[in-house]
Image (cartoon, rainbow, N blue to C red; front, side, top):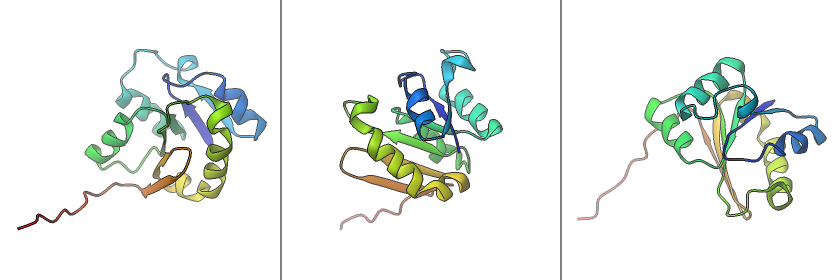
Length: 129
């Protein structure tokens, strides 16, 4: 598995992933720091990377485009530094590695995670009478 770390996360995550033998790069080393989320997603998909972000726009893009790739891991926590979320993130990556390889959106916070398989489909909502 290869991880592309979004601009909104610290480059120190590269070393964190390396400790677990997970290849990772920070977007700032391969692309324009001002690139759109869509450009980042296109690059990740073309190069076989999973996007690691704190930005909800990636999930929205996956849904809007009915995209099958790239997989996205969203961290929904106030403190997004490794010392706070490293353990749950690595455990989640290991547990759902096959889903990430096939295409998934995983949302993580300190107490839970949510896994959705790509492409995302709209949820049916019932209206109350």
